[in-house]
Length: 300
Image (tube, rainbow, N blue to C red; front, top):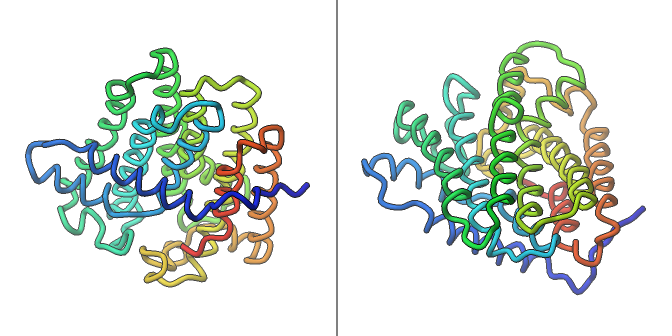
């Protein structure tokens, strides 16, 4: 079943306006941390640009569930802080050992490994502060559910667990189920949390939450499949990070297991299924439907 966004919806304008709003909120979220070196390291990675897909998904799902984006903005900022932490730590020599992120030297190349680790830790803990202490107007019971979702996504049941299995799988032949486990946890968990937390802030009913779980699971896997494809087909200049890293690390990827054409087909199917889950709310789901399409059409 084809699911299309109304031709009246200007997705490019929506995406840019949302991104700018998130950027302003991120800039305002870091206060006068001491020592100054810590603040510089935190700001260096947090304000380095990027798609800001996770916070935008949070804002869009809050609006779909009947809330306002202003209510979800602190949680949207928290999601980007957690994501940035994961990138800082992922780039470390003990992890994926990368020198380039978002077109700039990685955090540990500029500030040293110890300061990079601590900057990531500080961003992670600031994320929970954003939700717990800087979310005026949101009912405490809703914030508790948001904190629970973020804890699951950031910890062993989510991106930490996915990272461990990813590291353990380097240089080994793994099957599709293991690869899917890695991607659903290392990448997909935080994308799903982005969608669910926005809806929870707005007090979404269970039927909508179930649909958003299906939607976010699909876009989470599709996002990583496209990442795997771009790692092979795009340049470092386009990606803003080192291209070909998966091949060099002998990682199992979707193209390695399925080939480029079948990987692209699988991503398209996942996105179609994600959009179909939102069919009952289609009149209000334009941003989420367009964001799903954006995931498979992006070139970086």
